[in-house]
Length: 451
Image (cartoon, rainbow, N blue to C red):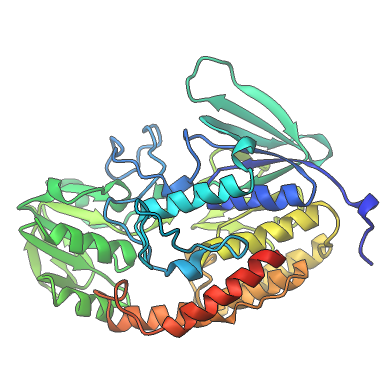
């Protein structure tokens, strides 16, 4: 039996991060009647979508004392999802038609940031954000509440401690680099860096570059660098190598298996025995979940890039519902997923939506981990949703009592993936799913008005 309006709780909630996840969480929590403060260490909202031409002093991002640059955007980045599919359900990501905006279906990163600012303006979210305010500590106190210690970016004032009823972590996971382990690398004389610190191709003019990886950043950056580099080589152990091969046939980029070792004369040796004398190794090898501010007394840990134990990638059973995470899953349509996660969190915190018991949630988590192990999925891929995205969103929607009507989104996601696999070099500019675009535009108007 659902609680009445008078029984619904209104809590004081702290949100860490004013990127897409933090913004939609702020909206859903406030709609549910909660009081919200959003902590954002940057001077503007947008999270990873705020382009910063500066890079870190440590190009590999392995020095914990380095001054951190939050965003990993490179200047030429365009979305690898069509705008219709990636937008929030309550606020469609459609072209504004304004001359200074990017009207392309797969727009550049600047357009996504403008969209997030439009979203925040539309729903009055900016007033909830404390800019240039970093959370340096968030820890459990009595009655399941959270002490949040924040620090202003100007460093003038002392740290401020506040207590909140609940904490929602939306700090993103594209800032702390993961790098490949390469035998002999300590004696290798070339330069190493991570794609987190790649911005423009010009610094690599006339150099021999080796990229490690086969994901979207490896695809994009290899094409970008090939404009100026002497040679570009890509090392990958992925089954997606055939996609790379199709792409690189047009750009004089050579594909290799993974690096076996490197030598102190600058030589890089691949597993097929081929060798390249290289100047730079660029790791396009993904990121780590990083929660240095969070103190749960060991209840929540990050082990081999698995944040856990978490029920449905969101609630740690022992600390539910007062601690939650938005945006951990990857290989997803992020913005709509954030929206469903946030709706669920907001409803659970108000007691309008009931969670299972702690024991039931732990059993579910254990069963999930066992299923991953049985399928051969490495632990570091715990939060990789992939093919299960729409099942996951549907489950969340059902918990929230929200109908999932946008079947077109699933079809569009599938059509885009198919087009990418067949035409990795041109999928952003040529497609055959205009019928789905029309269906999306018609349904978006209905969903946005009902939300």
